Image: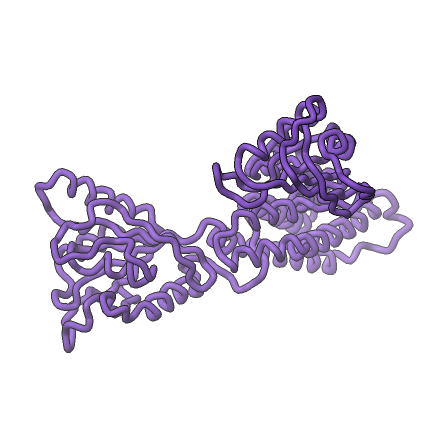
Length: 455
């Protein structure tokens, strides 16, 4: 359990902006510090879960810093299960920094990244999956990502992990009892133990299967629009993002650099990159743009290879298609409104084709459906469940699953009970790392260092 009183600015601070700023204090001396710098007129009671009105004043000079509100949350009914005080002042960078400095002068230590949430974990208010869900919620890029984080915060990941660990502990106890008291107990039902271990491994595998979905929701999908000049890439970006992010003209080579837009498609955050048209050119700046376009395509999760319906598939597209393989690709046939029947001559093997008329805002819904179909088909890995583990949790669960498989191999090999327990303990230990029941200080440092200051 950590000691000392910490303080931090708990709201985003932008110079000359922000209507409200919050300074949060947590620890044994939180209320004492607040009393030294906050003066309340009248007979207001300093009780838990009350909001007080007053003034932030320098304790030595009496100079008024701000007119503010003060919220008291005494232990254990607080975020950290310590005494917590929040000062709600006017926003802006100067005021909140002055209040923060007053708290430091009165004995508080400036909190490290994630230290409030770390204290909540160490004090038993939340487990490690819930702590990580808080970080995910703050950084959510879409409503779906936020809902998944809320599910984790409500314990929907912790509960199945705890149940699996409890089942594994029961099996370990049953096996160890046979080691110490084999003569006094009935023979171990080996087929039943084997079936339970196999079921545990299957359930863990189902949870591990949510890791890709979690990564997709947290990081989003990077989509690159690739193609020759004047096929309508910028028009496609503008129609899709419902904005004029990219310049659209009839002159080839208008887009010289990567133009980015962020969207949400079916709950998935999507970063769309409009790239420079691919062509041979003597223009040095455009050459740089073409090189960046190729690099963006190679780094993308999905490429929208856009062609002109009036021209169809050419050797240039064939070359691009070969270069971006094996990246998942949708061929977007744009300007479909300018032809009666397009002659595309697409090569075999292209399974996803979408027709659009971006300048007329047509076909965008079909494009989004095609992207979601690819996701649902597993090519970009997603699952229709309300939990999604992160990479740390996935690594621990995979270790647990591997250890269970080694237990099964040991049983099938006819080895004594002592050997069964070695890998079963490792499986239990790995499950405990997910929820934080068994976790090292270095792991905690890595997790909470990714949090923002003040959370």
